[in-house]
Image 1 (spheres, rainbow, N blue to C red):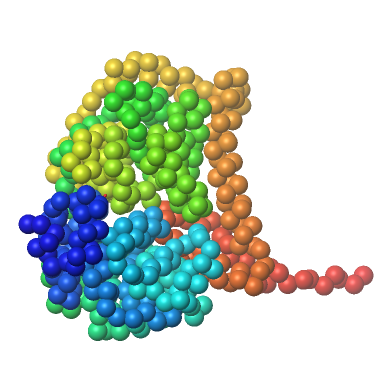
Image 2 (image 1 turned 120 degrees about the horizontal axis):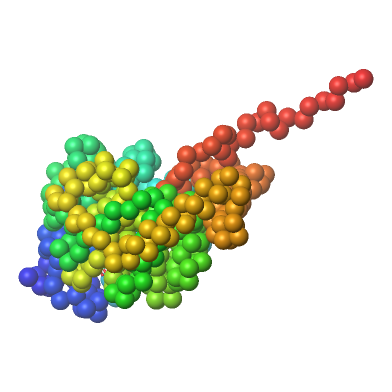
Length: 469
Ligand code: AMP
């Protein structure tokens, strides 16, 4: 089957040809004609399957007729993370280059001004994360009753991140007569129940078992102790087959710490996690794409859907606590039929997570031994020794040096937290919005709020009268 058989317009076909695609992927074959017919779609598909084009290509043709109105977008695509939203926007630009469609991208971390100016002019396509969209709605900057096509992408991720109430609210603001396309990498009972709320007589499309890992990815696992993790990772990174890599940690504070350690050991690495500003996240991703940064230490915010081809390795520095995350993480390598490698460092305490990963992927991950294991063990003993000495307060010169680097990581995290706090305590008229935005903007790997978080009860600010003597 060719793209021309799918019923797309000459403009879209030309853009597809320019992209170098010769054949539609299975999801494109199934979804494009259905979407063009105006039918709802319930799609089980992961990123990497060509899913984005399966809805953007027909949407471009559907939107070719009709007029834009100020603040009333004609279609809406909801994405769980800023990166995914930005990626979909790139796709619209690429495939829509011969069609005159206007688009706005509403994501957190960038200024409201430009987004509002676009909305005022009127847009055909609105691509948004739920929190930022609700912010604009509440400011009266966008109306959703003109939306005729709605895409809810990565619905399972939305559920994991606690966005479903926001999504339900957004859908309640739309006309019931609309076309809805609902995509999820997994289709659990809960997901189906949710989909039933939004869809009418959908065509079900499933293209790949959600738990399958690409056969082009060689997987392996190294059994280590906690202190062996960093030396083991460094040994693996030094292998000459490692051109570039995603290195996944479970917690964002560990991302900073590991980055500090890798940089200290001379690795060309950067970080990507939810506490970074949007501009530095974009900048880091661009540097990684261009090869300026070779290794990207990241939290799971980067695991979903980031579409970068030619990534030779994925390292799970931590065993993921949710088995599906394993599938998504290692899906960053071995894309589009290329060869990929995914290695994981597992400690004794990871057993129960490993069991659940094996269940999900339907097999065990082969255990490998590293040639440098003896050196790694020696280094780990030294690290353990230093950390014991450190705890006793009798740190050696080396331990002081390595600790100071780790503290740098921690202090940079503290600085970020402090600057976030400073922002939220800034008593500007938009302070209220900012606080609410913090709540909605949890499209990332949030850490639990400690103490009062950003909320300062009003009575804290009441001036007390001095007791008269
Ligand atoms: P997605 O699943 O939308 O994240 O797409 C994964 C990658 O596949 C992206 O880099 C697309 O540019 C690419 N792609 C999409 N459709 C095709 C196609 N028909 N042939 C080759 N590559 C494609």
